[in-house]
Length: 444
Ligand SMILES: [Zn+2]
Image (tube, rainbow, N blue to C red; front, side):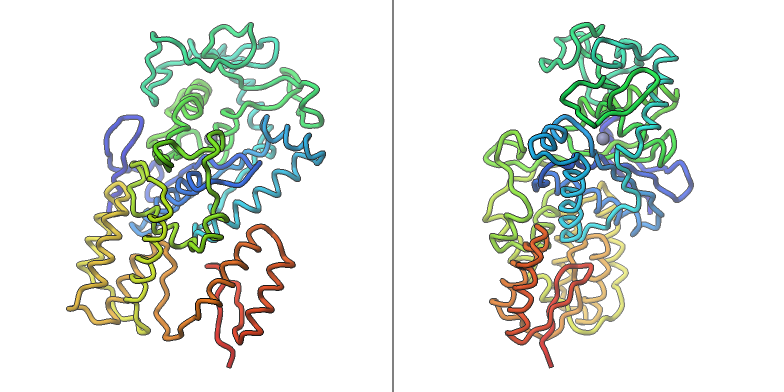
């Protein structure tokens, strides 16, 4: 079955036509690793995961790349403040992110390039842009000349005749306020974090990182590129300008953007200081799977309003839905399967897919075994961690200990994690660490 996706570039929902037969090559802008991801970021990673799982469900193979930005101003500042190398900051928060992704049952992309491992490719790209007259040196770095770009701002529907954006950064001697840095020349604040290039020692700008990593892993034209809506301008706009100037080819066929998580009418963000992390949610007794259920309850292109009541409601709903799974697994109901595939391949309509899961759960004409098989089939996309229901009731105090231990593990507090495991053991349960998180079994 074909996948229909809303394309930010054309403003229309389109059939996906991959460039390489049934293989879909897609790139996700990953995090800058200098702090905890907030749940707005995590929503966007869950949306990427739903896209990947839907493609696989529909029979495509997927080549999936998510980058890690491991060098930037904020990271360099944090490394100087803490007096530790940049790589230590990067490794620490990359580990935290990977733990979050695993807790959320997100399939980890096979390719996770780090910016500092791709500096060579960035330099080659910038040399080409300089040679062909798209880039020029200014006092503090190499800039891309936006006026030379064809259709600049099409993705963000920028009105280039209107006032230029208020946030103008970079050298006073750049040719236009819209020109952006491809390379920043070394300054004392950068310390050891410097790379040699034919056009001067320094480090890459943020936008060039993604162009270089995406094209080196996936080729000059990608099937799909995703990110949060906040990346449409300037990040993705600038990725398109520099990549297409360098190759003369379209950079991306389908642009997919996930909306914000809102808190009291404002977007959740580090700068507004209204963010929550997965750790904070787990500490309030909400499981990562319940958070995932909550995310799927809103379409990825709609804003999601964060409330604790909403999360609590999602947790209750997920537990009730999972109670409809039986111990025996029968045959997947083809009619429901067809309807499910139609919904998820229609621009990833997860709210209606969840509603269909409930319809299956409540369908008295289905046997328990067939119901179970059908819900497990849906879970290949939903990723809620359904398992055939075994009649063992885990007491609440054990459940709470499991959550506390997962939190300790997320924060790498191994001593606390071991202490809680011993406590669970002492209460008569064995602890198993699986891909899906912590599980317990009653001791014989
Ligand atoms: Zn990016």
